[in-house]
Image (cartoon, rainbow, N blue to C red):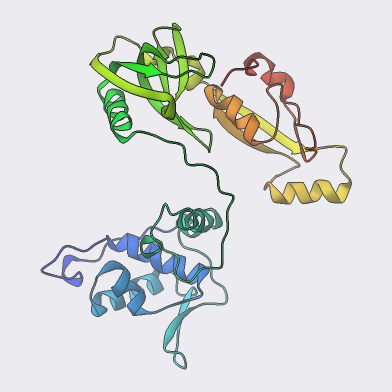
Length: 300
C-alpha cells in the first residue's frame, strides 16, 4: 500500500492546528470511496474542520497517488469511485468497516466520529454489560504501567465470600464478553486471569518484585490450524474454506497459550479441542501438537 507524504505547511490551514494529519484525511477519502462510492469536499470540511481549499488539495493529492480510483462526475457535481478502484490503504478493508458498524450499533462509537457516512440498518446480539469500576480499572492500569503489586478484594466464583489477595498485574485481556487482568496471584502462587468485574476493592499499591517474563503461558504463542470437517460434502467444505479465508484447505489462528481456553471456546471447541455438540464446520488439524498445552477443565 502507498503511504501519503504530508503537504508543505503552506497548503494546510494557517492560524489553527489541523484536526488530523493529511495522511488521515487521505485514508478518509479512500474509505468513503470504497464504501460509499462517492465523496464531496464538504465531507472533508465537515468531518475534519478544514477549509475548502485544503479539502481540494487533499482530493488532488489522493488523485495523484491513485488516479484510477477517483474521478469527478460533472452531472452530480461529486467525486465518484473509479471502475477499476483498488483501495490505497488497509484501513479501508472489510474488517475495518464492519468493526466501525458494530461499534456504532453498540453505542461505543459516535456516528459523527466514524469514517462511515450513510450506513445500513444494523442489529447485533446484545449481551449484559459487565460492570467494571472506573477507579479500580484506573488503579490497575497504573499498577501495570508502574510494575506494582496491589491488594484486591476478589470474589472468586469458587467461593461464597470475597477474599483479599495480593496481585501483580502486567496485562489486560478479553474473551470478547468480559475483561480480565493477567496477574501474578501471590495467594495462588502463579499467574492467573482475574475478571475485572469481580474485583470489589483495591488498595496498597507498592513496587512489585515479580518478573513478568516468567509468565510463560502469556509469552508462549500457540498456532491452531483449522480445516473443514472432513465429514462435510465437497461443496460444504468449499463454503467453509471461503467463509474462513482458508488457503490450501486450512487457516492458522495464533493466540497466547494463556488465551487458548477462550480461543477454543470462541471457535466452538471444548477444552479438549473437540467440536461442541451440534458444531460440525471445523476441526483442528494439529490437535496432536496442541495436546501438551490444552487447558485443563475449569481453567480459564
